Each structure stands twice: as C-alpha cells, then as structure tokens.
Image 1: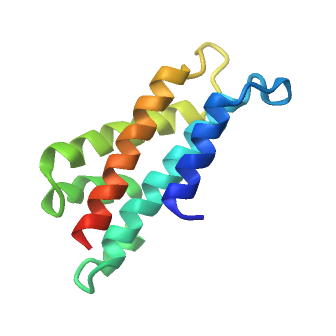
Image 2: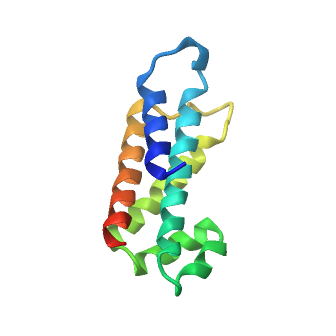
Length: 121
C-alpha cells in the first residue's frame, strides 16, 4: 500500500464508529500512520543512488540523517511523530490509547511529509 492509502485507512478508522473495533482502533490507526511514515521515508531514500544504502539502516538512524535531506523543522517533527506513533502502537495496561485528536495531528504530520517528499522528487 502507498503512504496515501495507509493514511486514508487510518483516517477511516478514526471517523468510523464501529462496535466491532472498539478498543483497538486507536492503536491500529497509529500502526497504519507509522507504516505510512516509514514508507514515505523509504521512498525518499530510494529516490537517489547516493541515499539508497540508507534503506538498510534502522529507522532511528534514518530519522537522524533526515534533516540533511529535508527541511530541518519538518525532519525533527517527523522524528517526534514517529516516536509518538511507535509508543502508541504498543499496548501498556497502565496507559491510555491515543485520542482521535492526537491521531489526527500525527496523520497530518505524516501527510505533510509525504507531500514534501513527492514534491522534491
């Protein structure tokens, strides 16, 4: 799936009230948004032969290098969003799931990254 399709699926989970997915939709939406972010970053590395080897690095390392290839403020926001989404994907019995507002903001950040990468390609 493309990052846009993953984000559309995440948005649908947030906006579609369904008793069958009650309790699991926040983490599922977070997982879809994180996957979209990772796919977008991967497409950035795939866009040039000099950055191709970055695709083999851990995501944390990729995010550290991202400010050299994108707007610094955007790259730092993407790193924060990835960390927040990663935390939201894991179930902790003592923590609440992310709210729809938090998820919507993170999805917006990922959409901004995706459009920025597409424009630079």
